[in-house]
Length: 327
Image (cartoon, rainbow, N blue to C red; front, side, top):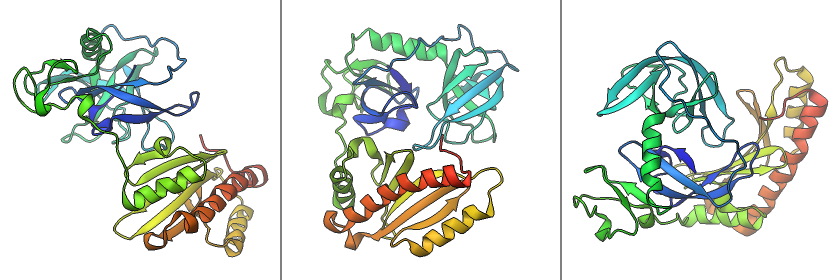
């Protein structure tokens, strides 16, 4: 079972999960809890991971903690900080307050003690205090897990109004809580996303290129594909009508050599329809197509060319010009 925030998986029946050690796969959303902002995911293939020790009591103020987070397929981020406050009430819920702050990228990720014990799940930032973040304590998470386990694996949701956990086998007429009658979305009422229009065409391109569009999907108009050691992000920008493919190849070294930039500029002159650029320290190879020209027949050769060149250029940049592999 995986635990994250409810708002992270909202409106999705399945989501993509994976790690550096485990290949990506789809996981079913089996528990929705908008009150505590929790969701439980059930992978189709169990992860081979060691047991995670839980902190028996919340870490005291001043205790060092680590917050882990990952945003839209980017590299894992780890922030160090200290517990600032225990029992902080926010919307009537008791939270741990800490300063291992990562903006939105830490939402749904774990908060660990220095001993490697899970202290809580990071929620969201406190609006009135920059650098102060909230984590739901392990005791609350365990209580929710225990209530969910009482259903013997049946998907469930907590009613935001009466706080009761409703399992799918209980009658849920027209999306309302059978206990109090207020609106309630259980996992069975959430339908898998079906792309339309340009997004459907992009997914046809991804599928024809030999990749699984469901595993690549990061949002209605965003996809991420790994080709060799490179990561290609495809996006549809509705306002401009542009469909972009950005292949993140590698990272610039701490002190880049002039020859590296000279190589990129020379290749830009040679490459048809592809362009090198840098974003921060990332080296990116990009392709642009307007949506009115987007069909599988016209776009697939261009994206296949991008995939091929991405897998070729990252090796050249690392082995010959001292760039660093992506994490």
